Image (cartoon, rainbow, N blue to C red; front, side, top):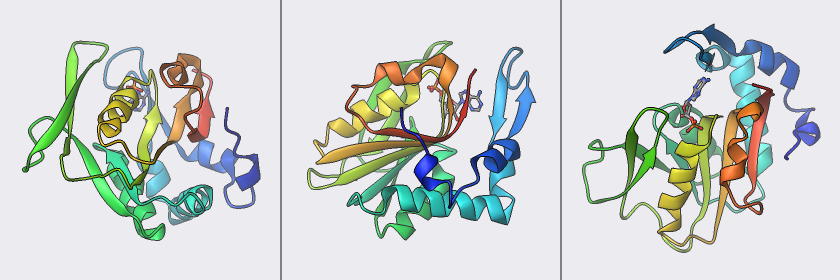
Length: 186
Ligand code: AMP
């Protein structure tokens, strides 16, 4: 498991953890929804996240940050600009205008399809996949499988939040570098 200890001078994890709004029973009863908009609206926590993510990935040679719709579209482009990388969106079915690759995956209720433009990446890319939150891991696992179609040099995975009790990491190969900044044991 990745520890953010080494970035404690840049990010106050306790403060960041407190800044996430918990919304009980949203969107359905029983879900503790972790609302990241409260992290982004405060200029101090937004800067801490931006600086922290930059420090975590600045030496990795990232060429493309791939953000997952829709909350991966907030820190994703911000980080891409700081890393001098490009930004690529992974979107729900039917949103991207040009030719796409797609993957279908199981959700708690039914199935979902995510897509990426066929010309978005190539085998010379070092990819950082980003989303706001790791829960069961199904969404990110599908995104990793989609990105692997491009055979990039390397794939890194980053989240702002991880719900460690759901053990989403078990879906990924052990050698995959998966980082999260804030962890909740639910
Ligand atoms: P999963 O595929 O189960 O890992 O779910 C991850 C996706 O669902 C992410 O895009 C999250 O934004 C969203 N998500 C799942 N559970 C929560 C939660 N408790 N609070 C906020 N977002 C969630």
